Length: 88
Image 1 (spheres, rainbow, N blue to C red):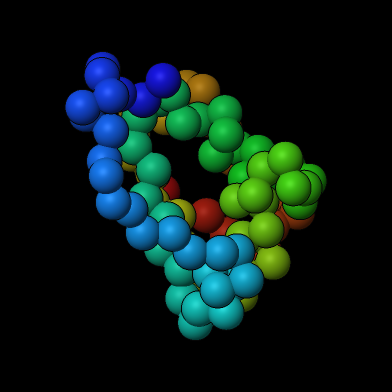
Image 2 (image 1 turned 60 degrees about the horizontal axis):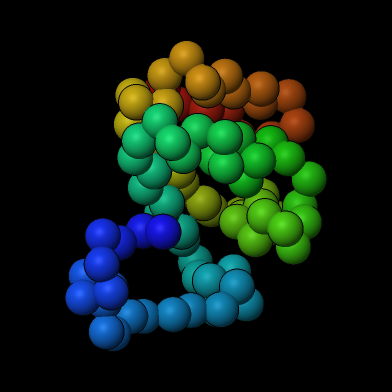
């Protein structure tokens, strides 16, 4: 799904649980590419649900999301139910 062949699949990776992530003082999320627009909108504006694990970040007091311009027309930000004003 993500790799051309089995040989391209990384043999090692880092993993971290949601509890560990939420205990961090600050969180930085970097999002790149128009294919991420729909899920980013669910993470930021959708309900907090296990089906979208990143949505738990809505409860974090200091989470910064940086997204590139490729999100473009697929992304409109409704900040009415978010604590912080977005910076563009």
